[in-house]
Length: 326
Ligand code: NAD
Image 1 (cartoon, rainbow, N blue to C red):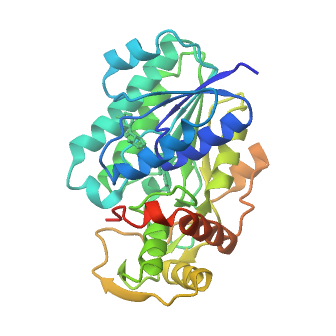
Image 2 (image 1 turned 90 degrees about the vertical axis):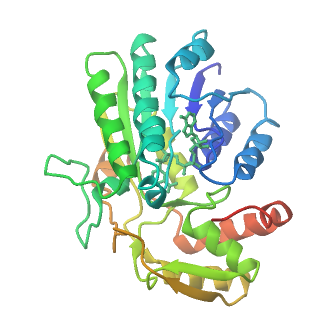
């Protein structure tokens, strides 16, 4: 097999796990990432060191918001598929630094869409987020957002504008675009600014476990292998789609902590702090479209996913324990 695939954000959590899977399936992968400092770069260096051990992987450290450098670096490649996963994530930080979010999420996505159009790329898989929906209450959020939508954060606004601009730019092109809206992904090689990995680190190292609010907020925790599986199915779709990638079993942060306590055999020392600005109570996806179109449903239970993530942390503890989790 000689199919070339571009993965942007390859040093990031989801990009890394997808790239590792693609390489194991015999694809040639070109990875790009700017290795930004949104969280401790030691996580990105760790992931890249693992990818560099594998065959058929080439990596470029470039900033995708710089379209001149993007085109110069990638001009001689012919890609069958582009997975655009690079982004600046994080809801809270986005209010403090909106311009970085516009650069990394909106401008970079416009540059990738233009690249797809110029190069007649068959398929673009564009990562987006459940954050654009805000609080769902008990209603399962459908992908169709013709109704008035009010993204609750700068992060969500820049991701939504990336979706809209990519669709507009590619509307009269040969590129089919699949937008995948992820709901709270967790698993090995995860992000230190997200709850699951921080909780594991804090409990394993007997540090205070900080929860913003009372811990009863519920999220659709989705295990990374299920997300990679969804991305692999999405790359073979022949039409434009927008699909939720989540879990319709939500869990509270308090329950996640209990699962980690059991997996580690250690009790957490919980410290509750003020709830974050506009933090939703519940975020619940409708999975009907992903089920109908891809025959996809998450297959990893949250408990098993937590156990695998704890095992990964313990195996790599010497490296992970001294990284920064704030
Ligand atoms: P991540 O931060 O671990 O990975 C993103 C990578 O993109 C980082 O390594 C970063 O350095 C890189 N990057 C940022 N701006 C760049 C630029 N201008 N040029 C090149 N590289 C750049 O995040 P992740 O969790 O792997 O998220 C992947 C995608 O999924 C993102 O689009 C994110 O918005 C989306 N998403 C993730 C989650 C989740 O739960 N992890 C949930 C919803 C949506």
